[in-house]
Length: 339
Picture 1 (cartoon, rainbow, N blue to C red):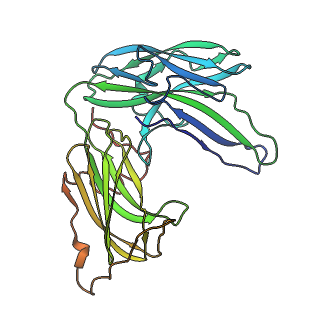
Picture 2: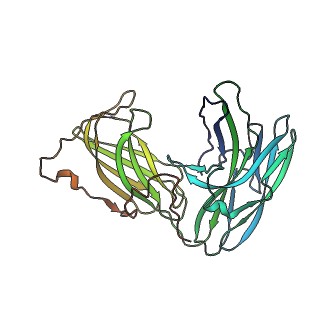
Picture 3: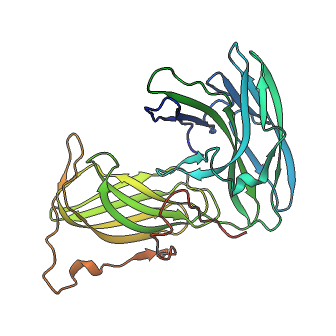
């Protein structure tokens, strides 16, 4: 699981009738306390292992069970909360995130049903809530993830011309392990040099996907070759969910001059080693702040020659992502293992 994160997305509007939305979400993880309180309310799983802030159920396909959450109000005022199930997702930088209330529940979140869709907690009050979990018949062995979310139903809106409405929610993860033969496998797609969004900082975008059936944390090694030689960096990623593709932005701690480069990426630690090679061109130089090494571009091949442009695709594990581009187009499109 990913470490707990607390993030806000804010937007503003000059139209008084339209309030902007700020979404704050808290994902509970094993290295956090079981109870979490944000925005005046919180929730904790009711289970034997109180050191874990999320549920783990080992269940066979076609079976069902129930569980309980305890919601609590830490403020001196009543609070109304929405209660709903969400799908677990892989964040673009890896790690577990959860879908928003407006997102259609299309994966593991459909296995969950809550005893109430809305509750009201009095000042300093606590309340137990039941939920049920049913694994569909025919579900393949492997790891699956959903979440149970509580969200303030009556968010406050700031005064003034530029209004901000803040929506606060907390999510408890529900991991389901369906026993049977299953393995993890990270497959690499394509590699491209580009700036990190909103910056001129260099990065290598590595398209990857967990094509296996288990949660895993791959180790990614990237090499960039230019006229000045080859520089290599290794990074341990956070959790990648089965069936999820992401365009991972591998922040590159070296500046890059304009021109063409050779890139090699390898993923290990999640099944067979997967390798991809590619070429990428920069129209402008990319930098990183502070002391750094600099790579110069490779001279283009002579006219009419194939040169280094013919370098291969995938080694070891092979490339099982088809065209790749459509598969990796956006995080919201999920590739699910067959059930």
